[in-house]
Every structure is written in C-alpha cells, then in structure tokens.
Amino acid sequence: MPDHYDEIHGILFRPAKATAIDFKQNVVNWITMCRIEGGGIPMFRTQFAKRPFKSDETNYVLGVCWLGSDLVQSQWFSNVPDDDFQHMQENHDDYLYIMKRYGKGKTVEEAVKAEVVV
Image (cartoon, rainbow, N blue to C red; front, side):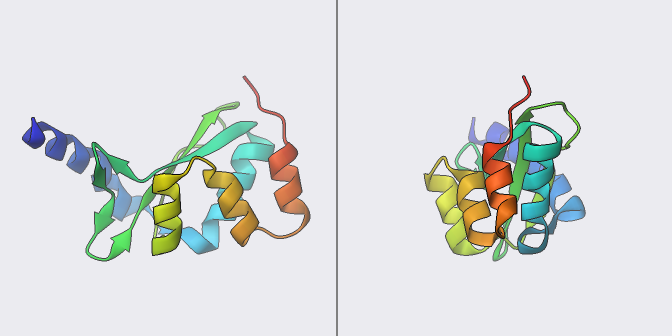
C-alpha cells in the first residue's frame, strides 16, 4: 500500500510546482475571494496520507474553497513559512489564523463575518 499512496501523492503534488503562487503575497487575497465573493470556507491541505507537500526545503499547501458558489478555484501556494505550515498541520483554524497574521484591518473582520453559501 505505501507505493499506492506515494503514487497518489505524486499525482496530487505534481501541479503544485507548476501552478503554485507565493503564499505571503497572495493568500489573504485568495481567502478574501473565497469568503466574501464566493461565500465559501477556506481550508488548507498540507499533506496526503501523512506525506507532507514539500519539495526540498519549500513547503506547499493546497487552498480549497469549500462550499460557497464555486466561483473560487482551489489554489496551490508555495514558500509557506515553516511556522505557518506547522500550524496548519496541527490546528483547524487555518484561515482565521492566516487572516489575523497577514490580513489588515477591515478585511479580516469582513472575511470572518461573511455569510457561507450552501
């Protein structure tokens, strides 16, 4: 079974290197689009089958806009700081933590209070 999971991990992770955008520069905008424009709940995947999304020393996460109006597509992010990556692995407050850490002023409040579209 480990070979199967390695193969699936590789299939899932392959697009990360080709399509990932920088985490710190883009994650707040993506979360804002998901929450406010799309009415979704941002979630971040750090691994598959206990195999982290890493290449050399670079951390990757897959942002998934769950529920909502399906306007916001999933997005790979690269260069995720080690402490953020670890937090996302260990906790379930992904987007709240990120917005409080990197967001500014009213954007954080708007993202937290936005309605969820089901």
